[in-house]
Each structure stands twice: as structure tokens, then as C-alpha cells.
Amino acid sequence: MMYGSDGEENDEDEFVAPVINRFNRRKSAVSAEPYDPDNEGADRDPAVIHPKTDEQRNRLSEACKNIVLFKNLELEDLSKVLDAMFEKPVAVDEHVIEQNDDGDNFYVIESGIFDVYVTDSGETRKVFTYENQGSFGELALMYNTPRATTIVARTLGSLWCLDRVTFRRIVVNNNAKKRSMYDAFIKTVPLLSSLETYERMKVVDVLTARQYKDGERIIGEGESADCFYIVESGEVRVTVKRTIEDGKTEEVLISTCRVGQYFGELALVTNKPRAASVYAVGDVRCLVMDVLAFERLLGPCMEIMKRNISNYEQQMAAVLEDLNSSTSTNETEPTA
Ligand code: 1OR
Ligand code: 1OR
Image 1 (cartoon, protein in one colour):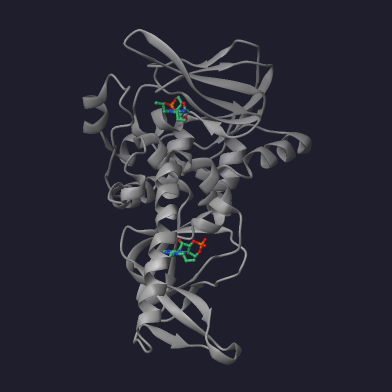
Image 2 (tube, protein in one colour; image 1 turned 180 degrees about the vertical axis):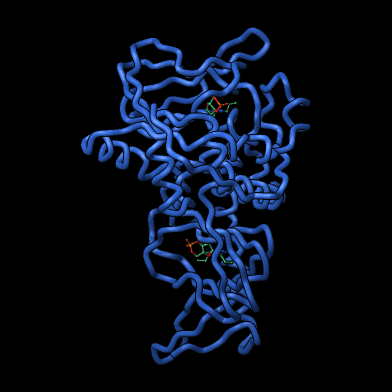
């Protein structure tokens, strides 16, 4: 290992770690410990550098391309992270992480299949499998908790490791604020209330905030769909086009979504074009998730969404009935 000469840290905020999951035996110690960057010895430890061949560097960049925790990093920080990473071959049945151990490294998968086990009250069950991609081992480093799971290689594999100090100094600094800021909001979103803490944090990591001005169109009916939205502040109106006489169409208001409600799920669930248009009412902020993250992370909420989708048809019938029984209404606006 070689050492460079860098190591600044300027995040003054205290980050209070949330409880990680209900299987964590040392819960109280976990939630009581604040994140204190000053304790990390940022000024004392020089930057870690593991020299790499061009070939290694290319493989590493490729493996890290979709790592969510690296997405917010400035190029310079990302470069420091990549410098510090080192390659580790893994044998079949090797335990990369042992539940309840202290955390040493964060791992990015280059190749291999890794099973995740949780032991609770003497009972061990498999909770997840990583297949040739992804990352793990961030929780113990982020929140100073014991390892939440045991991770075992099912095949030969190769991992890229990032030491605890560099991970905390660079990656935690950049992501902790986002997690603490959005976690509080996400907890109040009814759709997501059934998620485990760990699942909720994964959701927070992939969300991005978007702002819209009054009247701005967020979704256009008939367009193809690539993301899902939760209203963080403000309100949106959902409208559908219907044909009136002479081939003219008008947009009919069918519902509104307020803070904590979601929209844009229908096209993703049904694989069809957008069923309605959605417009901002006043200034609006939405949290947005792309379709891949939606499919990967919101599986546990699918039943609720499907139930709500089946209500749409009933609501639609009621709206149409209302419209037909009144010739003019202030809830419609001509568009063509
Ligand atoms: P860590 O540092 O605690 C074990 O070390 C790692 O396993 C952990 O970080 C996560 O990166 C990873 N719950 C908690 N940790 C998980 C889970 C998980 N899956 C992978 N890890 N659950 C599985 C959710 C599909 C919830 C289990 C109840
Ligand atoms: P999307 O991906 O189709 C438009 O993009 C979004 O508007 C849609 O997902 C839903 O989130 C929402 N009632 C309430 N919301 C709806 C409806 C709907 N359709 C779409 N969205 N109805 C169905 C209308 C065809 C019933 C209205 C009473």
C-alpha cells in the first residue's frame, strides 16, 4: 500500500444513525451513536492509494459505474475512492462478511454470486443473492453498527474493497445528509410504510428531487414512461383527454396528488404509455425514481399499487358519469 498526502473533511453536521433493521441485536448502541467526522482522524490519516494497471482501473471503473453510493460524488472524490480500492479474489464458500463482526471494508462486486444470510434467534435464513453486480457492506461503516448479515460466496468471485476510513471520509460524508434528510419524509409516505429500514434507505439513495413551476407538465398522456414520482411538496393535477364534438378534445381533471402521494406508477406496472397527464399546481417538488430502481426496490409495494390501480377504473366510471350529467363544469379545460 502507498500513501498520498490528502485527507480533508469539512462536514460539520452531526449525523444521527437510524436503527438499521429489526434483526440487529445491538440496536441501542446503534441509534445512540452520532456520526462525528472529527473522530475519523481525517487529518491524521493520509489518503490510501493502491496502484493499479490500466486494465485493472478499467475493470474497476466498469464495476463502480452503477454503484448508487458513488453517484453523488464529485469526480475528484470518485477518483480518490477508486485509487483507494483494492482487488480481492474470493473462493467458493468464503465468508466475506460475518454477521455481528465490526465493519472493515465496503465491497463492490466485479464477479461472482454471493448469498446473504441473516441469523435471528438461532435461526438462519437466506434473505438475498447478489449476482455478478452490486455492492454490500456499507451499513456497518455508515452507522458504526455490527455487520447486519453474513455474506457467503457461492461461486468463485472477485471483489473490489474500499477501506473503512476512506469510505467514511468520502462516501459517507456525501450520502449521510441525503439519507437523513429524505428518510424522515419517506417514512411518512403511506405507500412505503411497509418497507424495512434497510429497504427504505435503498429507496432514498436512488431518489432525485425535481422542481416544477405552476402549470408545468410533469407527465404527458400517451408518452412512454421511464420514471415514478412522489410528491414532496405542493400538489399536482391528473387529467385525461376525451373527445368532444367535431373531433375536438378536452382535458378532464380526474384526480389530484398531494404531499406523500405518488403517481406515474401505472405505465411502469402495465408497460403501457402514460394513461394521463400530470401538471404542477403552484410550485411543486417531486422525488423521482427511474424505472430500473422502481422494479428493483418497490417490489414489496406492488400489491398496494395494484390494488389502487384497480380502483382507478371505478373512479373513472364515476368521473365520466358526473361529466355526462352536467353539460359544463369548471373542472374541464379545452385543449384543441
Ligand atoms: P453491513 O455492513 O451490515 C452486511 O454488512 C451487508 O449486507 C450490509 O451492510 C448490507 O450491505 C448487505 N439487511 C441488511 N443488510 C443487507 C441486507 C438486508 N441485504 C444485504 N445487505 N436485508 C435484505 C433485503 C433484501 C434485510 C434483511 C432483513
Ligand atoms: P402513468 O404512468 O400512467 C400518469 O402516468 C399517471 O396518472 C398514472 O400513471 C397514475 O399515477 C395517474 N386515476 C388516478 N390517477 C390516474 C388515473 C386514474 N390514471 C392515471 N393516473 N384513472 C384512470 C384514467 C385512465 C381514473 C380516474 C378517475
